[in-house]
Length: 472
Image 1: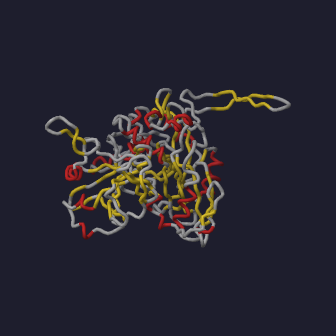
Image 2: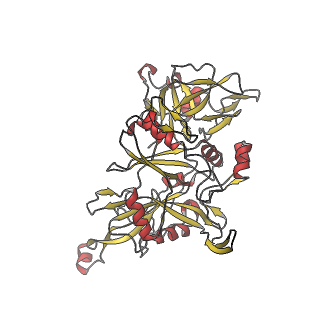
Image 3: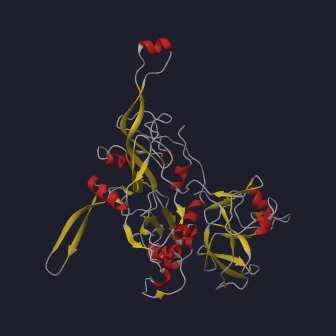
């Protein structure tokens, strides 16, 4: 789902715990620091974390940092080049996104026409906001066992994975009786591999040459792999990573194992090589939270139990009667499958259920994303909500709010695989829908880390870099 701003009505305000001139508004379940001029019932525009405001919008609202004629700081607080919105802690309080008055867009629309629920990206032909991606990269990659050069539309049924919408903005998608499965959202780079009909071309015959026409077209099943957006061929220079060997190794896990028409979508986590993690690391001191640093150490490295050098380590076990040791493999990187489809030659896509995905992955000897819980949304969800402490909430609650409360029981805390870093969040999937219906929810501390990483434009979120790769 594309990034956008949302017209909202302020319904919840509370005082800032450590600043008399600030208060905290809550929108879509996110706390946002605002000034004392914000009031209950006021309509505003909410720009979520991970967005970028346009130069025109920032100039009209004086949002970027600048200096006056005397060289003193003036204007707003956004970086003049990035103009990005981050999750931050402001004097001890969480601030997740930005709230702006409706008058902030008065230069491009009649604000009386705006209503709660409107989504804003462009007004009056002028871009207001977009998703923040620090820099663009390019790349190709490898295809098939024969490593043939990728050509336009050579694998027409090799579809990209659908964009995952934000759970907080999609609560209306959930209905009573829906079966929902919660899985770990992992911070890696996406991959996809399929065994699909590939468009190929015979060598030109003498008649073809005389008539100056290409060789006859035919189709043949072959393995094809790619990033989230890009189909890969043997000319790939590694793109963002400058090394595609880790991708080739992960794709090879499916060689000879997929059935005709099967496509598998997965997350690759760990390390590109001995010196490079797949996802950028960050010094935890930058989060300015002593408890976070105490829990997770001096640096966050999104390792998921992988070892940059690969290989084995000895794990020893002791009990009252005996002790023994065994070698445990620590791969350099690993693949976790989160979706599989079956595609026929007409291009029709059939989703495998989560249970079918796990069964096929067990047969192929590959891992799937960890599952937290599966449940059915009850008729009166507010009467059965139970949080981790065991307290029952009998308030009014929609099916979507019920799911959100369930998700919030799992979206924070250490990664359950390697247990050395914060988890990114949770993905909620509606199992009983014929088409894919998945929604993500990231935890706040992860968003803060993500924002810090993006401050260095040479090290953006690598998953997002895949969204703008081009096959040149």
